[in-house]
Image 1 (cartoon, one colour):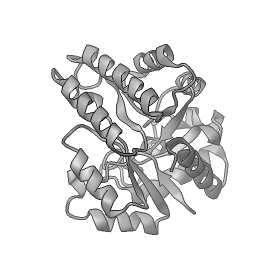
Image 2 (cartoon, one colour):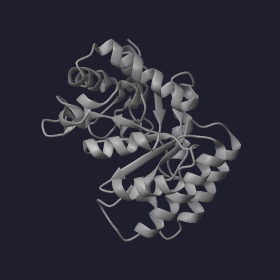
Image 3 (tube, one colour):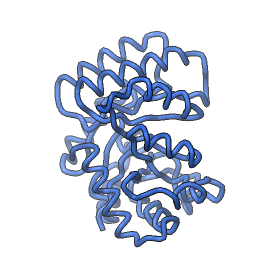
Length: 255
């Protein structure tokens, strides 16, 4: 069984002391491909170092996380565009909108997302979208810009059936992570109606560890727990879920 973790911050400081060991656990668990979202200029070096150490398994994206958008977000975006022009990346991301923590820079978040949508078009890359408490606002901006060339994934999707259908209609995949294993995560009301062709698996490590590790540091090696939960909800074999979601990730990110 081969699995792809489509969203993992394995370069994070939380893995500084045991990153290699954590990655080898993942490989042994069947997680053979890991796609890494960028946060801002402070995360680039560690992310690219991780990719350089594991070039056959780890693949970097380039983008600006909405929680890193502030007064000087334009400077961050210049660096994002500069990097995208220097070398290949798997996607533009993670980018999007976040209204959970602070709404102070919401207008700037919207502008940053518009710019990154433009970069995805310019460099012919998928978008990896972060939409915390802002699904509708994010989908509106995607819809406004969709000309048939945009694709990507609504990462960490835990929305409603209607939101899932809207994301798919916009040409995007749904990134399913540890929330699917939570008792009140809501995935049991959405996933049974979703075709496998629309899904990716992710850990979003070190965040959102699946049951029975909930509340602890998450890691790519826990992805089989998410795959098994998705298989259970779809009433399919876990091997079929692993194969289909890996195929989807390879096609989306051109791996």
